Image (cartoon, rainbow over all chains, first blue to last red; front, side, top):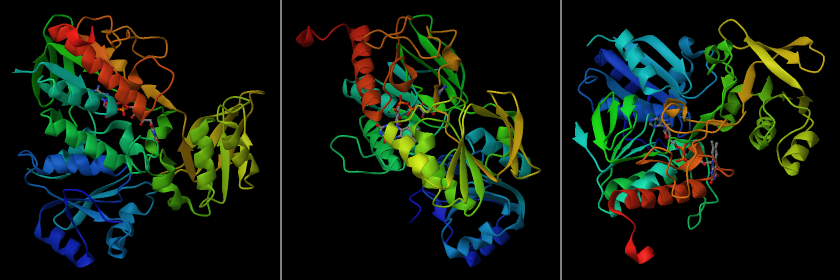
Length: 117
Length: 310
Ligand SMILES: Cc1cc2nc3c(=O)[nH]c(=O)nc-3n(C[C@H](O)[C@H](O)[C@H](O)COP(=O)(O)OP(=O)(O)OC[C@H]3O[C@@H](n4cnc5c(N)ncnc54)[C@H](O)[C@@H]3O)c2cc1C
């Protein structure tokens, strides 16, 4: 399976590390092309093109990619049992993680809470 | 305020079809959706009964419908919340979080959404034990004990599919009989991993951060029981998305919008199409059919009946 979205995909753990260490605000959605994941990618695609969230880097990562263990095995995700796992990193550190579908209001609520404009 | 000939609320199959017909008839059309464009179709892993197309994912079908509507000239806005509206006068006004729009006619194609149990604890455990999608989340429950709530075809079929992963599946159903088809009831009944708790309902989901159990009421004798489970899949049907419009157009007791044969509601210039309207069968094909009729009804309303069709 591949991720058929318009977001840039993270393919390796090294790439993920590089991304979160070199950008202050990063949101990564780790999922599949399923009904609970698609709405989250959709929101991210919309926000990626907006002026309001230009300070955030939006990426997705395929859940079944072995390298996605870097997200799947995070302590913050240890109790998650619903796709997708969405992780918010600030200066390389996890500041929030959610499991399962989220709508636009929920995503922007978190972005406003955890990241500085 | 940006003006359109027609505003369509809801970008599922009904709304997108209406958009295709109206934009081909040279009407300016705005389609607004509060969520992801495609509606319930994107919840569907494989659609095998849409004529003319081989089995394909719901996502692919929805993407094609969206592209077709956009190519014909519809403006389509997803993830857009409606803050207010006024459909009373000749000019219909919709105020959203991304702008204000007006039109001469409106189509309500807001479909339906999965019914939730409505328990306070339900929200807390979504993604931490509670799921509405067996195909998405089933493998998180490998060798675990889980419950499935519901008694229709979806609940029965998903319970059977979840036995691929789970150690045991308990189906909790509020009535003493199932509403599913006989073959679905038999498949669940024949599965050694499945047991049934009839005339029962969940009172509470319990656990600290993760789901560890459910408190169940036996409706026959009023007794309560705690069942240790780590997963709960809820399939209790769909409810119409008409709540926002309950003081605007006439609904039946189930909250479905009442329309005439042209899909017109009791408010002039306001039409409804698809799963949100009163009808018996809810399928992509029936939604597409409603969308077509509503678009042609709108054309009659805006420019008068097509003389060739009279
Ligand atoms: C899991 C599942 C599998 C299915 N499988 C099949 C199948 O294989 N074949 C088949 O024919 N049918 C299937 N169906 C049924 C089919 O998907 C529906 O009948 C069809 O999608 C209804 O189309 P609709 O346009 O009326 O509504 P919907 O598809 O529900 O679309 C309505 C849209 O309106 C939006 N909306 C809601 N409220 C508002 C608002 N206030 N403002 C703006 N937008 C709003 C929603 O976000 C949604 O995008 C399935 C349904 C489900 C849930």
